[in-house]
Amino acid sequence: MEVKGYVKEYYGLTELSVNPKYGDYVHILGTSSVPEPITLPTGNVSQEQWEGVLIKVENVVVTNANLGYGEWEVDDGSGPVRIDDLIYKYTPQKGQKFEYIIGVVYYSFGAFKIEPRSAEDIKEYIPLVKITSLTAPDVVYKGMPALIEIAIKNEGSFDENVTIILSIEETVVLNKTMEIKAGETETVKYEWTPQNLGNYGIKAEILGYDTKYLSTKVIEHPRIVINYLLKFYDFRYTMSLRPEFEEQYAQYSEILSELQSYGVDFGSIEDKINEINENVKQIEEHYSKYLELKSTYYWTKYPLTPMTHLRKAYFLTKETEEKIKEILPILNATLQEVRELIAQQANQTLPSGNETTPGPSNVTQPSNQTMNQTTTVTENQTQIIVKVVRVLIDASHDQYYNDQKLSGLMTRIKDELGWLVDVNHQESLSKELLSKYDVLIITNPGEDITEQEAQAVKEWVREGGGLLITGDWYRYVYYKSLNRITEEFGIKFNPDELMDDDKNTGRSYFPLIGEFNFDHPATRFLNEDSQLYYNGGTLDISGNAVWIVRGYPTSYAVDSSGKVTKEKGSKPVVAAAVEVENGRIVAYGSSKSLSDDYYGKYIESNWPFLKGVLLWLAGEI
Image (cartoon, rainbow, N blue to C red; front, top):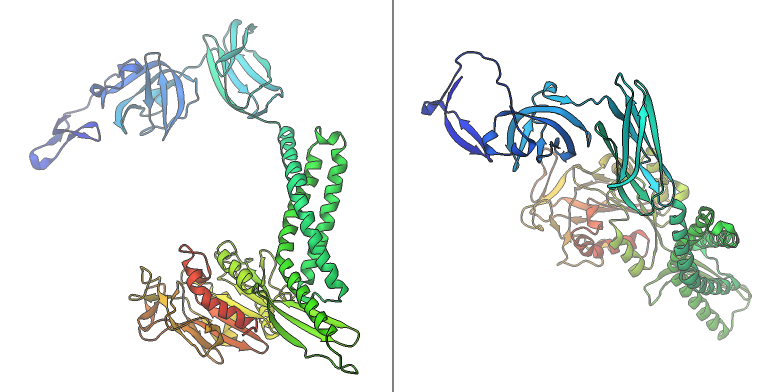
């Protein structure tokens, strides 16, 4: 053929640019056989003069089997050159030999490379005597013997004397000459005991014939690792954690015993106390078993069993320490109240008969520990029942906004309200589970809330529970599950998104909200200037449900198609409340507003609202 065009460089590759507008052309003149390739040393290929030329390299060895992106490297002793898979892909092994490789020289990404056109362009070297396999464990333990095996086959017609060299990290560990009869296979074995950790390259070579490579990793024996860990946990537990826990537990036990001597009914924290007692029992069982095993040969020779007991004792102690920290302020506050009550009784003359002091009383401790105590006093007996508000956050329905993202909310509930907070990760929402709690928080679920669970939640609310349930914007809101709980009571989550082009935090879909129903107790801690960060959908309300928070007149809502579902000026409802027999529900269209997102600004701006909501749900306001 005859080609006319302009010579250009395309990312370093010399090309002919053919443009008929400028008189360029490609004329086919006839047919001919493909020219024979030009034979070059590998070290001479990487030159611009060979770009686009069919070349051939001979008697080459793979020096790098994986350069990335389908490229590999060969060398005939004159210097390396790359082989690429632009036209034909071939996967080599390190040390593999080829009689020849043919291909077109190409240039890309700063490197010259040979592009074979098909399998016919690559001819493997097949030795008469070859290594059919080189095997060793992928992982070897330091100080432990590992077997390396080399299988050698003579495929020739005559017996051969060959020399086998085995190297590990370029250090020859075996040099052996042996005879291999024609048609037979021999196996050479070497036992290697590494003394250092790390990655090792293994090379097996039959001089003049074949080479194979292998890699392995040397690690510490698990027994050694476990011994290290055993000593670590032993030191941390016996020298630090256990003494601190024993001191804490002694203080806890002393307060608990005194309260029990006064006949205090621990009410809503009874199960917490039982959990602590059961944990302490298990801690002592595991630690005693550990001490028993420690005094025997198990300590060093068989460390896994004592390690198991020590770790269980360690983590149970850490868990129990947190449980005690959680209820210790409650016990201290209760003890103070009991002592004050007894002091008052000592200074008073009780009326005759079985008259009693007024029953329920709300007490707010200086530490903000809010407690409801039912106190009954007779001539011979004082009975105090401790009731602390307990909150359950549901994370069992694959919620994106789970306890990991609600840490700011949880901390504020514990520190400012003095309530107890638990997280449900696995259990279904049942009446039995919910019976322990006063407030339930369900953020937008990722998995379905079943009909059975929804009925359990609704029954729990009717019996006095307080539910905070939150949604999300149209892409994520599981409105069917949420409405399975709320729609019966006049609150419906919509699959839309609140927008505001004027009042937002940078984007219309990150609106600010600030229209509040100050007639509702949940807005107690808000004022006319309050603004809440928001990202979520809207609500429809009916029946006895009332709105608490709405969007500004400039806000509106759109669905997944972009259609406006609530016009500007409609002030879409984003938070609503309803009383259901003895219980209460608050629905909020944004789960994000409860979270630590945007450097904590969502929970920071929403906390005054959420604080009022939680206190209302718990019957505190």
